[in-house]
Image (cartoon, rainbow, N blue to C red; front, side, top):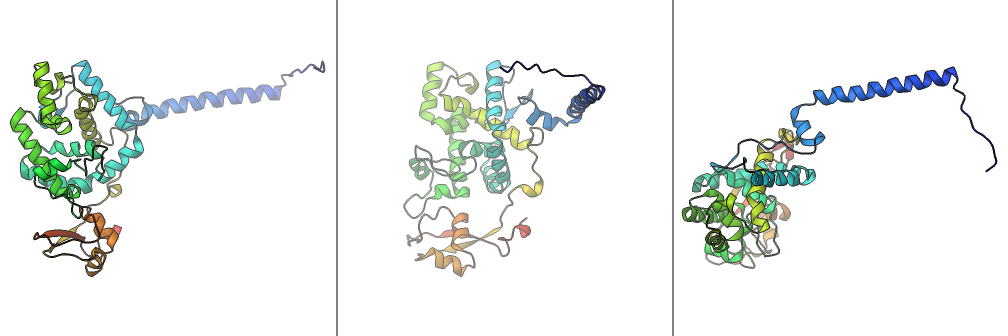
Length: 316
């Protein structure tokens, strides 16, 4: 150390400067406080506060969710936190929802399956044609054996688990059988996740057929609450802090169906004949797994966009 002493002389200029800084800080803090008071409920619920408000009443497929029970309320809260604060993923799913629901909703209605089951598709796959580690495929995550049992074609050329309309029909058939067996849409949804035989074993072991009273494996125990979280976020995005304008949702693409009764030697050439490129045709028909389609005495319907549907501004 050099031995020098440092001192600060509190001059009038320094005094005035300090007072001005203090006033500025007070006004800034007050401004933030007033700003928070004026923030609408959706932003408060979604971004500024550390959790989401759980509703006092909630139904799944017309069946009450017992949110008065602490374990049920906390299970839903967990999935709301997981899904509600994974913003990039959740916004992406919400943006896709109208396009996928435009196909799923009419099929559910046709089969008499409650509309809430569209949120089960969200929980299964994030509305994407994914393949699970167990080799379940498509938006509805259907295993090959189950697919064939419910009438879907699965081979190296055609895999109808990737066909959204047909896979939704297969899912409906499964759910209707489960509902007939259990008399509960909630248990039908649980059976979709863990299988009927596994669910039967737990019902027999625990002497209860109420989903909310059953102790199940972690995935199925969380499953219905994940579905419910998707329902709440999709039906009330603004309240939970997801501000998506109507024109920001991915639009429904109008298509026409072309019946094909014979083989297609080259799907790229077939696409060009329909005035669409190979990429778009495969995106609209992900069930076509190769670049050819052999003749197997079946009539296939291939979707192609109606004229002008490639242009984003022309899509409804």
